[in-house]
Amino acid sequence: MTERKASPSGQDHPSPEDTMADLVSDVPAQAHGPLARIAYLLGGFGLLGATAADTLAVAGRHTGLHLLGSIELVQAMVVILASSAMLIVTIVHGHASVHMLTERLRAVTAARLARIAALLSAFVFLVFAAGSAWIGAELWNGHEQTELLHIPLRWLRLLWTVFAVLIAWRFLRYALRADGGHEA
Image (cartoon, rainbow, N blue to C red):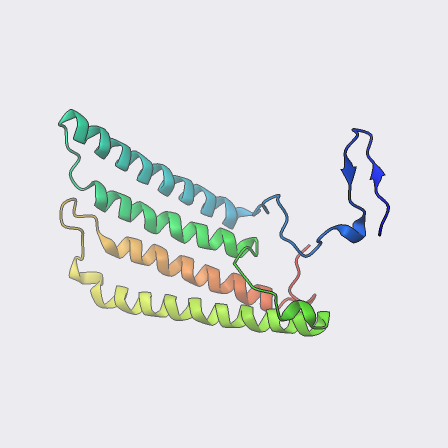
């Protein structure tokens, strides 16, 4: 049994042995740099655009002024929002992972497996990017667009393809770092 010391505020805090150091911090990690700022900006634009379109559509239903194509607007904004959210999560290493096996391994082996997982993740996103680029190239001159608002889908597909490549690049960067994949 460990002894607990009372803090100045009168609350008891567990000693370092009682804490669960392997749990994710309650403080969200922040992404920094120009790429993160662009992703945050686009994600915020997508979130606000989707919220505004849906709000106007609901208000319009109640007032009799219908906003045609609100679902198309929301879907277009979700492509922007989801793409930027995946990039931000990749930048801060926030993807879900299970450590039931790796926490029982030596640190070197666990780090090696984390690098392999990052390489596989990079490969998956490169496949997504290649498939999206292939479809985009095939349909670029096909004038693919939404039904009501005629939103061109080529630009949304191009945006997703670029973000998929950026996500793959971040995974590769993590996997190939000289310090075992850990950033300061």
